[in-house]
Length: 489
Image (cartoon, rainbow, N blue to C red):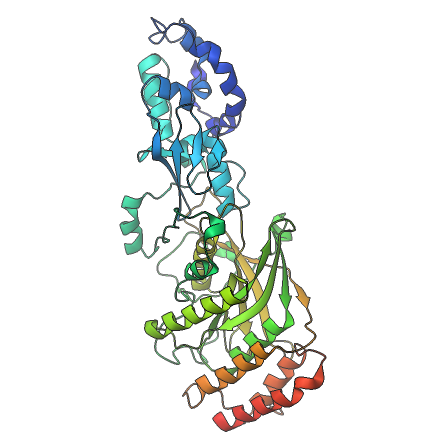
């Protein structure tokens, strides 16, 4: 019985994966008479058969340590909460989808992979809680009662690579530390019944931006990017605006977990938006996610015509964007923002915001859905030419043995789709943006020189040229928009 202590790192987690195969064979053991069997370490039938990995939910239910009930099981992982029902037969039913799992490991692995596709196992007994207490504590209690001479089992496997989860009573403390807990998804509706409007509201006012006064970030001191490997554990003293170089999936021997295709009209509109002001801008991305091909197609950009920090206006604009997504049959698939005079690399603040958005956009849907982030650097003189650098990125959770590290900003490979023509939607958005920034103190002065021989307007035109459809019938409309810019500035 020395193996009960699970002394080797991750021992129980590895054994748990065989639980489903072990459970059917327990019927014989469970049918044995209980008299005298539960008090012997090795002499009784139960003591001889039920090693630590043989103790299943059915055993704990049979011996009265657990009771079947709705909503008594929970998992907290990377800010996401999952709730399950415990059946009398030892199965777990995930409330949000009705899926049934035969063991804590199976449920935990499934749920965690929705949040982190790289997750290989669930460490179920250390992750799943029954009425707030981890299941491995109930397993340890069973051992103390029925096998008192066995070596004491470790209380939790969390120290062996599994992140400690955050129950509700710890959320207030997390908020004080600056780690705002995610709003809980609504479990009363099935995913297919939830409207795109509700999905849109999962991304509240863009949190990836500096909410300081207007123009606070204008042509600030150049920020030197750092490599992710130099960051280490989170440090509150570190500047949240520190830029971080992105990492390729190939560099860490992983495959990109999804494919991405982006319409040229999306790039044109967000590039135009980013050029207009010396302050950062933000917007949403609409598109479709195909679970069969694992392809995320970004079809539409939705600029936020608001000033950062103006919560009232932001709410109205977001409602308008939600309506637009819904009417066009699109889903919210990501967001964009600009670094007007800096490189198109994420800051530590951007990385945390993107990780939050990935979790929010996941919602309560049954299956992984990516959330894409785009950063546009329109006026960075380190760009190779006049074309703005538009960089897509996605955040991979930190290694489980280092849960307090920053997320890893990953470079996303993208296929670009050249649109045949400019849509009326795009042209209308461009006109509305010009009107919105008209007369603003941070509006770019397009008649001034950007370089020795190019004005800011020349720079804008040159950047948009590669993203403009081949159809020239809209050229005169674009020229009208450029004329409006001249007058506005």
